[in-house]
Image 1: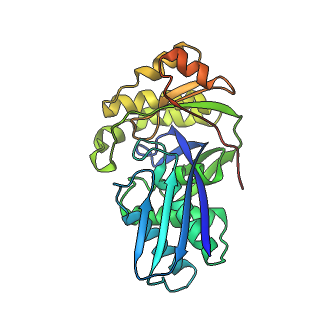
Image 2: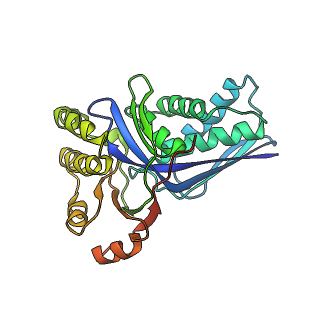
Length: 278
């Protein structure tokens, strides 16, 4: 039997690094994991980015077996294929953890509540050191959809509600940004400004997304000029996602491709917001 697991991506509304509290909006980009047992070896194939490190994936498999109190087989194969570009701020690691765990569970005929999958994935991501904050906000956005605010210091959900269906334009530069290279001191120094962003997010997440992008890009020394141009052109919200370098631009449904072309980024990825999935 082959177990199949899926999760999705998310964009940042409030970066969790300054306050330990983060917020995200789920998007439709998908990660799919296929897991099967057998053979003499354990193999991870990251189809969309073969050069990526596989430690996190191996931890997810191991910890899922521990969670279901089963012995990890001597041999297994894990294929991961994702529409989410790696290390661009679009929650690829959180999505992969959710999908891998779900695939291992299905292969073993086991069930786990979505929130339990999320919590296990966060634990695995922390062990793999692919996250600074634990990324509970990212993992919730990916797996639960909608708009979610979480306290990553104790992995609790503060707010979770549905989000209107919008088109999301993703400008994804070629270069990756690894967590180990982040200017943590500068980011933590934005905490007073981010308190205001968090307050705005509760009632107007798209405005908060824009404010967050301006603050985090300035602290990180990243280019956020495309987001500013998008807002001047009538976007509902636009800004750096995660630690970057991707820029997320939110526009009314059905307008994504035309808006991107008018901005001069016709090759941008176009997806949609993803509603709550409980």
